[in-house]
Length: 178
Image (tube, rainbow, N blue to C red):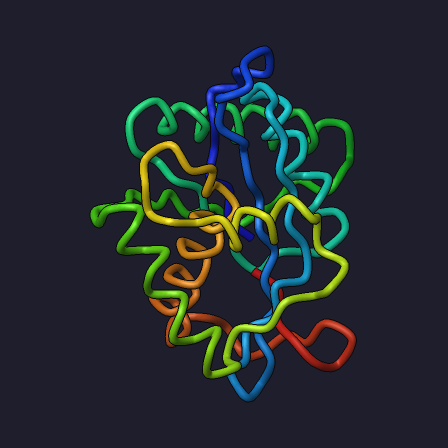
């Protein structure tokens, strides 16, 4: 999974969405986008959602964008892990801080050839807003692109770590979950 965090400006029409993308990787290296969560909510609620989704998907690895203010999310995540550990809840989650060094547009543009080739496939029941963002994306700064950015970063995280992972752990016998 991967979180593209937002400051949580829920009262403004133009505020960014926080987006968490869940991707499964099949043995043939096909990537399946199985869930996209997007909300205009506070950083603390974003952290709570990370763990709610981890309870559901059992992430092998979870990344988050750590440029600027987003670096502080690491502290919130560690605090939530400690809280969950003392409560006896699922708390262990392999976290990777992911500082993006390329422009958002260049990251998102790298998705297109993989999507066209069929090596990235989408669950048709994903949140409609994600598909709207994909259809309307034009690379301009005012475009909502948070779900796409989370997906691009998740795909990059998987690409960077595929040789470092433990032996394949299957989800329902088919795919690994990131």
